[in-house]
Length: 332
Image 1 (tube, helix red, strand yellow):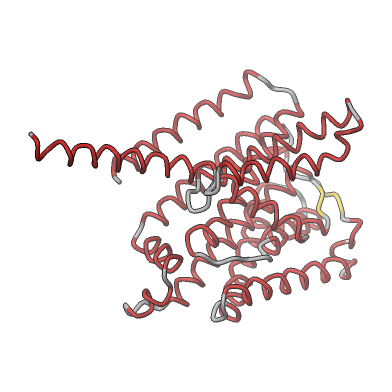
Image 2 (spheres, rainbow, N blue to C red):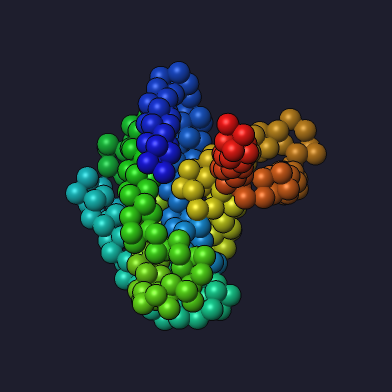
C-alpha cells in the first residue's frame, strides 16, 4: 500500500508539471477555458466521490452546494468592490454557508436509508433552485447577472494556473483524509454499515462529516465556476449539474479520486469535441445521443470505471503471480 501510495503521488506530481507546461505549448483562449472547466469540474466530481465512492452515500442534490458557492461569490462581488479581499470573503462565505447547510441536511436526512436520503437531497436542491428563481432582487432569477472580478483573475492563463493549483490542493487534501483512520471508517461504512455500527462507531457522525467535507469542496468548485464565467444564473442548482458529477465519477471510477478527475476531463473533452463536430455536420447537432452512446460503451467495457477497472486488472495479475509462486514453491 505504501509503495502504491508513493507511486500515485509521483504520477500526480508528474501530471502537475506537465499541466503547468501546457499553456506555454498551446495558449489559445478556447483551449485554456476548456482546461479550466476541466479542473473546476474535477474538483466538483472529487467532492461527489467522497459521498458515493468512499462513504456509499447517493445524493441527487449535490448541485445545491455548487450553487451556494457560485451565488455567494457572484452576489458579494456584484455588491462590493471586486478586490482580492472581497473575493476571499465571498469564497469563505460560500464555504461557511455550504458547511452549515450540509450539516443541517445531513443531520435531518442521513438517518434515513440511502434511497430516501437521495430523494430528500433532491428536494432540498429543488428548494434552493426555486428560491434562486423567485428571489429576483438578489439573484435576478433565471436571467442571472454578470459581475466584475479582481484584476488578478482577468488573465485566462493566470486563472488556468489558479484552478490547476486548487485542483491539486483539493486532491492531496482529500487523499490525506481518505488515507486516514477517518477515511478507513468511511470506506467500512460503504462496505457494511451495520457491522461498523456493531463495532461501536457512530455511523451518523462519520456520514455527516463526509457530507460537510463534500459540501465545502463543492462550494469551492462553484465559486471557481462563476469566476470563470463572470456570470451566475440558476442553472448551477439544476439536476443536470448533479448528473454531470455523477457521470464523471462513474466513468472515471468511484472511490479513486483520480477517477473523477479523469472522468471530468473525458466528459468535458467529449462535450467540446461533439459540439465542434456539430458545426461541421448536422448529424452531430444531436450530440447528446452520441454522448449517451459513449457513456454506454464506457460502462460496458469499464464497469468499475476506467481507473477502477485498471486497478482490478492490476490486482488480478498480482494474485495470478502469487498463485504461480505458491504452486512452484512446494516443488522447489
